[in-house]
Length: 267
Image 1 (cartoon, rainbow, N blue to C red):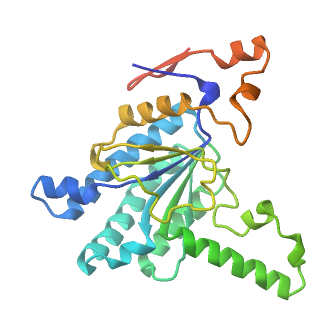
Image 2: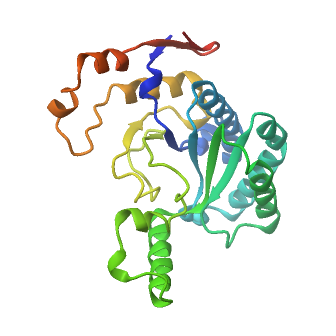
């Protein structure tokens, strides 16, 4: 049983879903088998976000660097993504889950892009949970793209170059419609961000686990959230400043709830 405080849940969780290939190799199977099993982990995490009321989830599905993989694996990944979106779409609509895409459309096979665009259009009105799929995405490339778009606006007289601020620059990123990332989870044992959301993770809390993505289930997600709630997020302030709030505010912050893998939140 994991004890969570509903007032201290992250609004936006991002996940680097690592370890699919190693999981499959350990079972003497093709790497694609690991990606297929990883889809079940996606379902578990999405369900948990719905139960807890976490409104934003971003999944690193295909990076710019993934193009370096064998062509047969890349083709299989695109086919798997297309089938996953098509099979999950009715459930996404029924549960009012919004799908958005972040990354460059160039290079994504046309049939895959069509499925994505269809899912995006059919779920655009939902607000219960927004799932962002980072596909053909790279953090450095995103920053260069944003700088280019800003420069074009300056050149066209839409804005002055001296007007640039971090908030204004953020509007040119793929994540302009999303809040800052509160928690990054990376499975598979590696401890790096791999060109993922480099601008957006200035104040993100990191959680690394050796669990391979196909084995990552609801219990592991809840443990990551529990660990997150033990952090002191200061955003430049001192711990004394944060702890200087009134006794009544502290009592409100410390209200516990219990959550099990099967029952969701119990009050």
